[in-house]
Image (cartoon, rainbow, N blue to C red):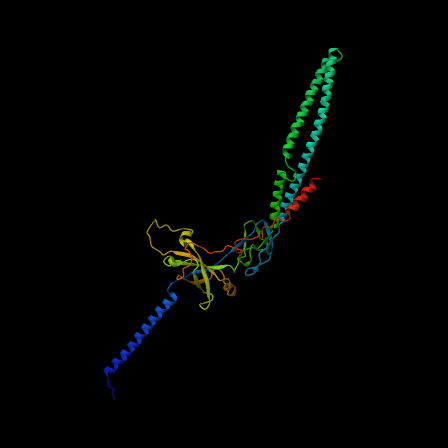
Length: 385
């Protein structure tokens, strides 16, 4: 039995399908426009954005052989903790030598002071002899008229006077020379003593720095040092990463940055956590130049053929400290960052970056010379006796 084909019904079915398809297309367009209008309008986003933080390098400050390592990668350390110990033998020998040189200089100055007094007494004694000889010369001259004293004796007495006067002048010159070295100051403040003190302080400082301490709190990374290494000043040992002070470096195309201003809010999705977790940040500042400007080999568009490539400008975005504590991040993680440019924000060239954290200053080196002044006083007092 053949089914009767009805062209009118087929046309109606096709029209209904076309209407449904058209309706679906229109709805999809409306939804897309609505999504853009509600969520995308007035925003710029980039996936060329990464978590950034401080990488504080810890380097050796004196010579020595590593005898102990007190930390390891991934461990948390507090500011001021001893992380690496050096043997410090060379530093100790240098300190002992500097202290011995200081004591020797003190003894030399004490000797010079005593020598000045010796020269004073010697000059007094020679002047007394000179006066006696002069009196004898007067008597000899008076007796020479009567022939009681020979002219030779008078001449010898005059030669003796000139000899004594020369000796007195020599002693006076030596006394003036020594006084020039020690006068106008005390032994404790003498320039030679101050110079020797500086050498002792430097040696003491190197001896103290045989224990390498953490300049800031954070997590240890990139440990390179090994027990037995013979390190020199400047040798990299490890790095410290404070994970409580992180931010986002987002690189936007130059066609996107016209509306970006410090103070605007930003949403950050970190690839490591997926789309479910959103971090909230604030634009802190815009780098004053494109990435190519600060490259190791900047581009030179004045030579060769020119190809226009959209440059990128780096924008710094601060993160919420509470969100960081709840969901820690690590420098280098990739993110998708979106900035709300509908907000007014602050002037373009302003910056809200704070420099008040431990990564910007440390006080652990402020007391390294504690105790050295008392040590110097004891050395000086022991050698002045």
